[in-house]
Length: 255
Image (cartoon, rainbow, N blue to C red; front, top):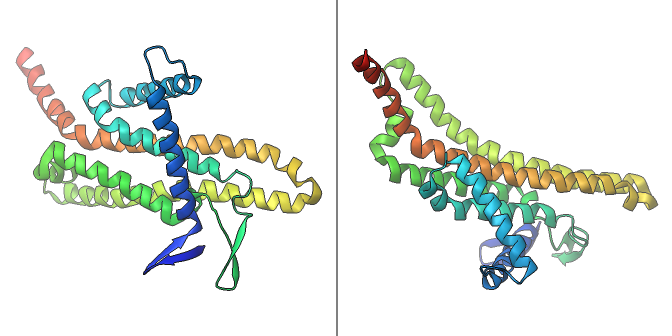
């Protein structure tokens, strides 16, 4: 819902809470970085270091133990994971969605979880896939990127290439809709259960809240891992093609 205007730009409640969530995440990790030592004395720094190390291990495994690529893409991937997770969980905080303000004679929620807005998840998906294509062009070049989709110019290969291009568009749709649908659906479910339960709404929503926490973690993890997989496939596809093309020659030479 729109709560203000800055010139021609409409400011929505999800945008406001998204900025607040980003500030919180930056402050949390900034404090952890300042407190980081060889033997951390801060419990928060110790927890954050272990968390970062665990996520890096997952990313390294996704990139087939290629440390250079893992280190290159790790900052983006962990940022996506932490920010999306914080945004997903922020919708469970007291007051989010229930505190209202008067905007042009109507009541509007002051705060709304960032990922309950399709515009927000679409922006995150567009960011992720833009980075994928930028690094693919950097690694493979324009010709290599075209050959990724069109390895040949026979009618069948052109048709398959067009399907691959369409698949890139579908990635944008699926990345954004999956995240939006699950988080928005959970918010709607919580509202419906609490309304139907009446005075016992606080008790009826407890299992739903735990379910929401689980799905929030899963959706953030899926978004990060899909982005990592897209980066890995986009930047190593050509290398795999050369390896596969040279394999029969090597076998023939050995024979």
